[in-house]
Figure 1 (tube, helix red, strand yellow):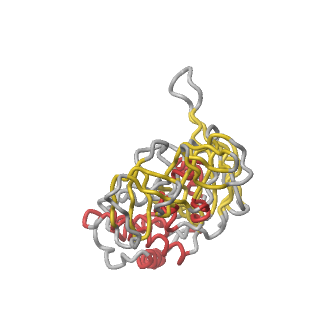
Figure 2 (cartoon, rainbow, N blue to C red):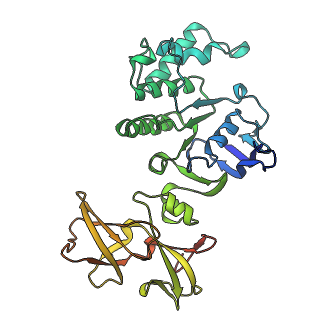
Figure 3 (cartoon, rainbow, N blue to C red):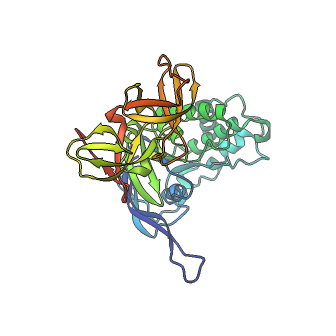
Length: 366
């Protein structure tokens, strides 16, 4: 099911009598393709959960429209939209078994949609097998792990065969190992069912690992949409560049002068016909190349060996942050007897941003 958000805006009245309205979602305008898994990504308070609540009908938009396929569902109640919702805190009924928790939405169907007991049992078993908890149907939620409870919540959302599946921070209550396992399960389930899925998270690694597309938000405003790797490789602005990536991008105060990117008094990269001006220079951790004759001289702090890679931690007076973290192949040996380390940089891992607007400045073939 294709989902279209048509100039969607949500304002909340200010609690201060003289204050202005709080705009949680600001002119959101994009199309979610049928059968895709979309990661809605951004920091806390950026409006991603509000966007999800607008799609499912728990909140009414101040402006704009919501379309499911050719149907305008803007004013349709949640129960008639055909959505399945999975919350962060599972929201299971503690006194009911897993079987009855999953069956609960089916018991509320009325009229032509009403199902027989046999049909409900068949649907419950199908959903339970899909999330691999079919052998746990007689347990209570308290007898299950966090990951198993989250699977019950997903099965309950899927049992109605929804047109759209909405997941609001579904992994944040799980430990690291369970998060990894459960996100792989969500990806598998989505591919098996083919249901259009919107996955809200503040964890960029989660979003990038399982999403067909990611939507990056800040302060209720859509910043960039694209395939995860495309957005990582080609960020539209400094916020997107800094938000995506682990370790994060290294950002330096720099300037362009006579076709060269300068950091301090060192010529880092030739960029051709770019206007002379102050810039932010973003260098991805994997964009550094160890070179004793390299143009970028940094103060060496320590070296962390991580198996196949080595992380070089360094400092620079023009760095907009605490430390530089450069990821280099493990076979490259750093001379730790020296106080400094030199790098050259890979041009396709360097991004320039306007110092004031923080918008991207393209150079070369870009």
